[in-house]
Structure formats: C-alpha cells, structure tokens
Length: 522
Image (cartoon, rainbow, N blue to C red; front, side):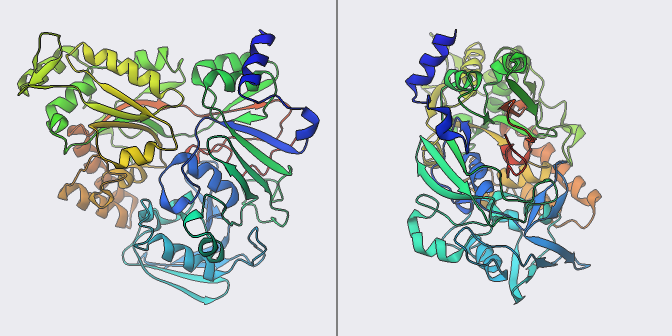
C-alpha cells in the first residue's frame, strides 16, 4: 500500500524533503481559477484564494448568518434603510504597505459597478446611489433603495477591498500576475493549474472576532497545489505530504475518518447545491415538460449513496430546507416518476426512434451538457446520463477543465450545464441566478420573467423579514414549477487535515472552509 501511495505522489511531483517546507502550510485543491480578480467572476475557485489575501468591510460569523466588524469597526443604518455609515479601522495597511482609507472603499465599489468591469456579482453591493468619504475613516454608503441583505452580502469575496494603485499598475494582468490586499496573506506567485503561493502579511493585526488570533498568521507561506486527480489527493493526505485540503473526495471521507493521522471536520451550517440548469432559449429544452421529465427520471438517493458515499443529501428543491427564507410549499413539486417522465416526453412530441432515443422533426433528443471536470461532477453526470437513457434522452457530456469552463459556458453553445453553487440564503441564491439582469451569466437559463424580477426586487428591498420571505417564496414556487433546474444533491463540505495541524475550524462561506486561516498552527 505504501509503495502505491509513494508512486502516486512521485508521479505528480509531490514528494519533497519535509525540512524544506517547515514554515510553509501545505494545502491542495482540485480546481484552479482563470484569474484572481474577485470582482470579475462568480467562480468559487477564485473566491477561496481572494478571501485569503483581501478583506471585506464585514466578516461572516461561524453561524453563516451574522455579519461582524472587520475593516469597518462599526456602522449605522438610516431608518429608511438607504444610508449605511461605516466607521473604518485606522490601523490597516495593504500588503504593499499603503495605508487603507475610505478612498479605497469608494474606489472598490465604483470599480465593481463600472461598465468596464460589469461585475457578475455587482448586485451583492446593492443599488448604489452615491459613495462618499467625508474623512479618511468614514464611508457614507447610500443606496437607491433598501437592500435587505446588504451587510450579509458585504461579507462576500466580490466585495473585497482593492488597491487602486495595484489595479492600475497591473492592468489586464491584475489578478493574474498579482493583486494587492489587506488580508492575512499576500499574493506571491501563481503557476496556472499548478500552484498558488501566498506569503504572510507581517503587519496584519486586524483579524475579525471569530478568530482568537488577530494576526499575523503562524506560517511564513501558504502553498496551494492544484491536484485534479482524486487518488493523488487521497494519497498525499494519507502519507502526510500535505497539511490540509478542503476538497477531499467524498467517497474517501469514511477512510479519512478512520485514519489515525487525519482529522475530518464538517462545516455547519452549509448550503451547497449541485444542480443542472436548462438554457430555456434552446429549442431542445424550451418545453417545460421536457425539463420536468429529465428532473423526475433520476434517482437522487442512489446518486447520493453510490457516488457521494452518503456525504450528500438528495435535493428536491433549489433551496435547502434549513436555509433562510426556504419556501416549504415547494417540497412536493419534484416527484421522481419514470413513467410520468415518459408520458411528458410523449406529450411534448418526442417519440422513441429505432435506437430508443427520442426524436422530433428529425432531431434527436440529445442535449449538450457542459460541466467542470473535477471531483464528483463526472460520475454524477454519467449516472444521470444512464437514468435518462431509460426514457429515451441521450445526454452528450462535455467536461471542461476548470480554467476554461467559464469561457466555454459563456459561449452559450449548449442546452444544459452544471455547477455546485454555495449560497447563504434563498435570496442570495435566487438573486444570483434568476434575475434577468444577470443574463447571460450567471443567469445562463436566459430566464426573463417580469413576475420573477418583481418578486426578487420586492424581496431585496423589503424592510421586514416577513415581506422578504413572502416574495422569495413566490420566486421559489415559480422557478420550481418551470423546472429551470434539476436540483440533484445538497453537498456536505469537509476540511481534512493532518492531526499535527491545530486550531483549524471549517467555515461555510462560499465553499471557503479555510477562509482566513488565522488560528491554524503546528
């Protein structure tokens, strides 16, 4: 067994003298990102690294719901919910040594909202009317309309604070060759698809209240290796070549829990949905009956048990029942039923051909399916492909490497795509995907519906929790009955580490269990 593990490690170049990395925290993940500019993407593989070297005005506490002071030490909100006045810390510096002030906050959100950036997550900052810096440590953040989850959304990576000097100096290479930040780690080097190296921010002393250690971090460097192969990541952790990973293959979690040198911690709470979405403007999947047929023809429990080894729960709704503003009335819309699926396809005019695959007007029911080839994605896609062949649907699977998957999805040349999306609440999830302003991405369904847009707007601007929940329930009901997505699994999230690593606790924010890493030590 040991010979096999060492062989796997040598094959991917992971064996190195332990003494040479004594002051380096060694992490690995399965997916790299196309860049590390958090304002220009929705991509989880960008966010986890951005959260390490850049900071937000507020941080998210362990409960996944409560914003706590960070770069902003306090704030007040006007009675009409439109004006937030933030008082900033006066002891913060960027990795470059530049002093952090209110001018950096104004620049950051002006850039996020600019036409040049067209930030896909810009909505997370609310509809800004004006940003003012009356003094170096005060920001007046004025909205056009109330945003019921502004403070929650300001914890997200897309709202991290940027240094104008760094952005302008690097130009189109910002987030590729470097990026400045006020985080506990500093961007050092990046070899795409190979390794990201961050170094300690020695001046850092402003960690949020959720950490005992306010800074600096206890390691000189953080090396994050990109190891796509599941077997190699398992071998690396089991043999002690790495200190931790937040992307340990689910099918080996039980094995990791039994290993004497490994500790497994599950993030709680955690809302992370694996789904397949339909591009409703493509003729093959424009009919709601076709979409419903595919959704009800699969066996989610079998997929959770056989592929995720029980480390996921079957998802029959787009919002987890434990999430804020979940609409309980949606729980019975998706009912697995193979015979009903066949009947729906018959009604939609798709008839079985000689080879068993359905046809209509000379066209095979063979939708093109795009997904990122990493982790469990391939096995889940193949399992669904097998179920759907039983009803005469031939999924054409197109896996893509993580560094080009966003580019391929932006080309729009497919019927179905899949990602695993992390979120904080029902409103968080639905404002990302179902608002027509977010066409063509992340609203890849090209879903443009006046009712949906109105209810989302009313939920966002609600001044009471009751009004917010009421409107978000209407959105959930409509998009579920339209079968815009196939919800498949609610994925558990783990952090797997060597037992010699102390103090680590997994966070839940946007798949970023490591988050800041301030309490980690040997």
